View 1: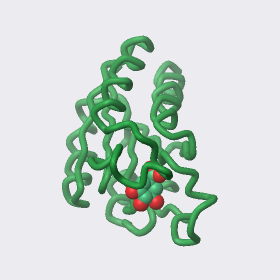
View 2: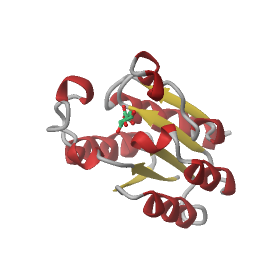
View 3: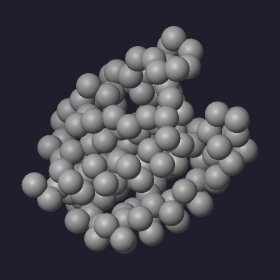
View 4: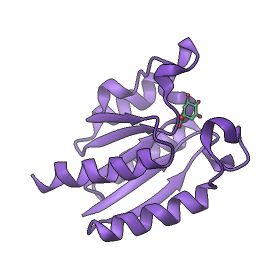
Length: 144
Ligand code: DQA
């Protein structure tokens, strides 16, 4: 069971970026934790981060034949990227959208995700735990 975790825009700065919102863990620390969680769940996890929309779309396309599922945090692209939404809709493997922060409780423009409707489900507001929960959700989906 191979899973790709795609971190989107500005998530490379986790740890120093608005720690009161996104926590103090760096992306490298989160990724190391996800690899461990994946291993415990019997999943092979790979993590990538891209700031540009096109690179995220390319990663989604490339993953469709290589992975069983995807965990995607598009960052702010979630709120306006129809191109990423189309890319998710174009591939057949399940994609779970995650957000560290509880976007439903933040600024109005963050309350809407245009990418979420193309995804199998969304997990938001649990900090780095959102990614771990998404791995568990994917495992349940892929086991069926
Ligand atoms: C985020 C939420 C987005 O609104 C924001 O633009 C991000 C991070 C999150 O993980 O909470 O970059 O996706």
